[in-house]
Image (tube, rainbow, N blue to C red; front, top):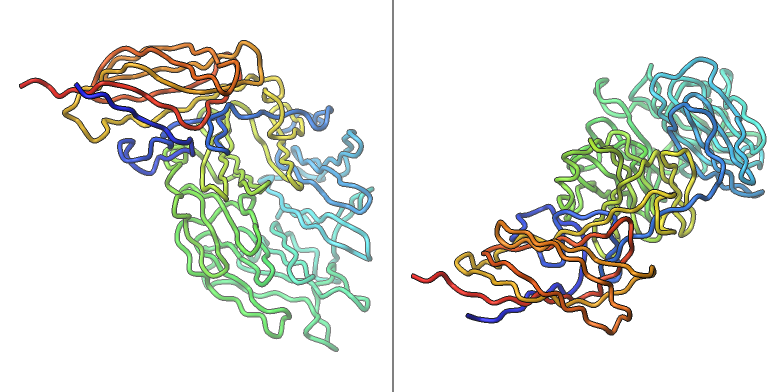
Length: 474
């Protein structure tokens, strides 16, 4: 009988791209509410209320936006047909659409009009509206050809671009270049100087492939359509070029497109995709959460980037969840156990509009606004590519810690068809090694670590599983 050691040198992230026997020991086929940022395995932080007062009313919340202004940031929330703004912790109704909306899909653009900060909001069913920090009014005019019912908005090279006109689903509009009496509220021609005038163009040849979103980078405007992606190049109407982008995979919800530098990331049913400035394709590791996505609806996903991490809301059969992707480490993790209507970020802070209609700061506290965090991490079910060998479990060695007193680590050790539950006291200090006696034998094994009643723990990188190995007697 030979003595062997199975090591997990560091914990990384979820990997559902291959058979469990083929993924690394530091990957997990099933995990949630865990943090592996430094290679250790920790119960993730929760979120705390940023604004004590909930978004008013009882209509379903749709969007959350943090509007940056010279006189201070303002949170904008849309619930039902009403737009709310929050200053100094107090929500105020600033606009209600006169007749009920059908789709409740919204987009935002931060602009300056007459040197005043404004937030422009489009819904695709009514004329654009604008908020100047104190009141809301209609954007544009019939005279300026800008009273069109558009849904998608983007600022590119100091012009407002828009699309989503139901009467002209392939049409891309752009405003005049502001200055010398011109305004982004005017989309008409300027006979004296065509290079500063507004206008529009049709994108694509098929009426059945409408524009579904816009996203601006420093040197191009991405135009998402239902089945294809285009881009607009150039700095004035005289040299605008619209061309098809080489792309693979599905196109996303416009709310799930996240710019980062000169790249765009977006979540689809097929996984995380990236436009790298030239072409769009699924990330090389997009399939690592394919089992999760198979049970998820991404058609209304919302996305944000914060501290080199991407966050995307998902709707699953059991409720909503947030997929987290670490751009530096290339690691996926899931957060669930709460409702996420929308997410937005400012600096190193991510904000979430939760099921209680509160705006909360993500990544703080030990609960989800009072809801205990249920965290788990499953190691791959493996036979170590030695199917003829029986593994006789002996002992597990680990180091750990906790911010909470009397914390425990729960661990289910499955060997073959038998599972044994273990309750491990978290060591008092990080230099202490816990020794966990094990039982059972079999040809395959896996471990499941989880917390107790929302408790917190950290398992240091580098755990060791000692077992004896024997081959079946002939």
